[in-house]
Length: 96
Image 1: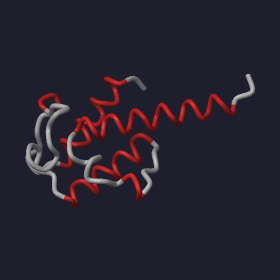
Image 2: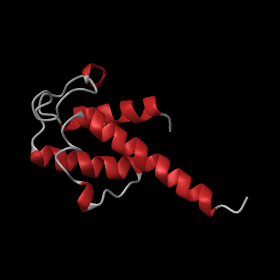
Image 3: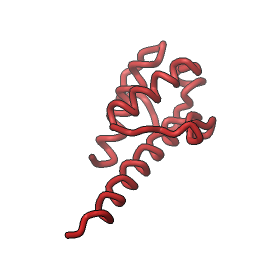
Image 4: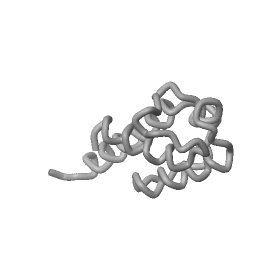
């Protein structure tokens, strides 16, 4: 999955969890989850669960920080990093 696909998927997930139900195309990477999108702590938990399910990731408790959930770009970067790390670890274990 490329960066654009990840970001677009995240924007759709975020729009579903926001009380304001914004058009995913209008969500900016610099948007604050709470201030710009109206997503409270319960909504963020739902975003985390949706991200884990949609991207087949397990987000460890120690990664659940305010910095991760400050802005859309932080979550997008985290997901991209985790997906890239998973691919790299799979390649390292591949004897071909």
